[in-house]
Length: 78
Image (cartoon, rainbow, N blue to C red; front, side, top):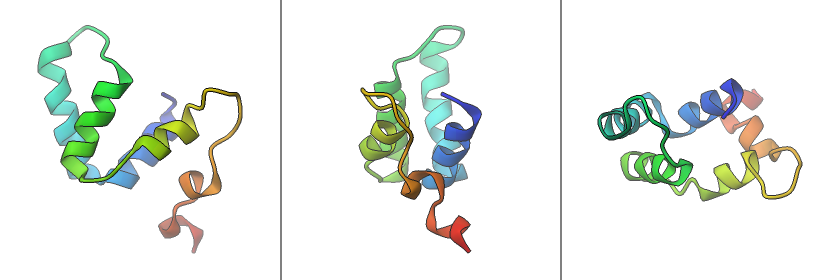
């Protein structure tokens, strides 16, 4: 994941949910890679949000760019 997508993801789920999800994944995978689906699932459990659309937009099966709703969320539109 890029820095921008991680920032957007953290803004979407909130700092507390993001940090809890990281703490959930860290003990089991310290120093080793983890699957994005497992990280997404942990984020969904802690935030109560469905993040499949976010991951599909940022990491599509086909090349492209994420939709504006994921790049410019409501709080950033002014």
